[in-house]
Length: 249
Image (cartoon, rainbow, N blue to C red):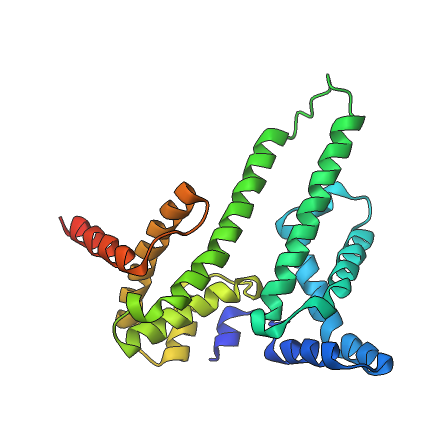
């Protein structure tokens, strides 16, 4: 059984998509650009926007899902030529743009709602304060994960000693990088995916997964305090060691 079968997922933004975007940007022929977009970019853009509309529940704030989706996709297209492939993956770049566009759309919708609704009217089925707090929390988590992946990737040789550990750690990072592509987050399925990618035993994978949990928790605490990850990898190593000693007591 392949990892794709195990995860029961549809990968819609592949390396072929990444290459097509670079080809689109480099092309100076309008007909060629149009063909590349229709064949290789349109569907991935539609799926990115669709995922964020439902994740952020942006559909609640529009009478026309189609109009909202088309507007967001147009916004992505307007920024196609601004993408620089040496700065990172196109998927992450356009996913963040779509997310930010829809967050702004929701905020503007809130403002319109506040200005048009009678101040004495209270929607008994909604708590806007709680919704806003939750949405803010989701935004913070997304920002943290983006920074977390970059930090661990940069300091992989310091945080993990052996090649096997780094191989597992990089496979876990890949799950973080492609999280918006994964539709089934079943723990067993993800373990199988890592095992297929690394060829290592579950026991070794479990050890690194547990180390990742400690790293994630420590970096998130640091992120909460500083609104950014501001800690040297060597200091983090020491905190990890102390955490493990504390856990054994």
